[in-house]
Image (cartoon, rainbow, N blue to C red):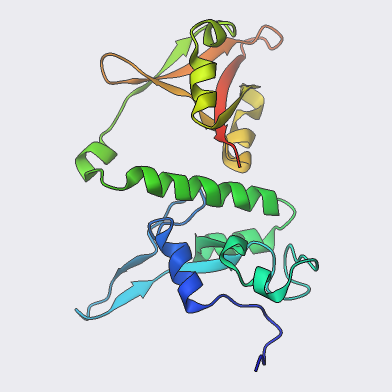
Length: 207
């Protein structure tokens, strides 16, 4: 019999949310590890939270009355965060919208998928990122846009003024191209409408 008026996640769902992002916080600007060993050889500690994207109960942040109890407690309504970020997103629901958190979740799961099977040396190797100045037409003519779109990304050029907002708050990331020397090139184009400014090409996985 249900006693609480909250639609909480089951332990299985909580575990799945954590495993699907490799036990890392899903905030792209955090990615803090949330699991590790206790002093006892038989125990581990957890600093992560299976947070509700839409609240588990009325009057909670981003509550959606159209969802059923099962949907509210389902894995699609959950995101794995560290305790700090869980507190952050619930304290500012206007900034951290449902769409925004879903983008975090999708990107975190994709990142975990891409890390599977890669050794630490290859995964954590320091790569120098350089700026490659091109014309906006270059990406079309070279076929870069078509190739990245075929990989399931959408693209947009954005100004320096908007870059941080797009990357930090909207989940976009710079387009980085591999170079013969092992470096990565960040595509930038002159922005003639802004003195001294530039445009940068960003990409984001389609939901």
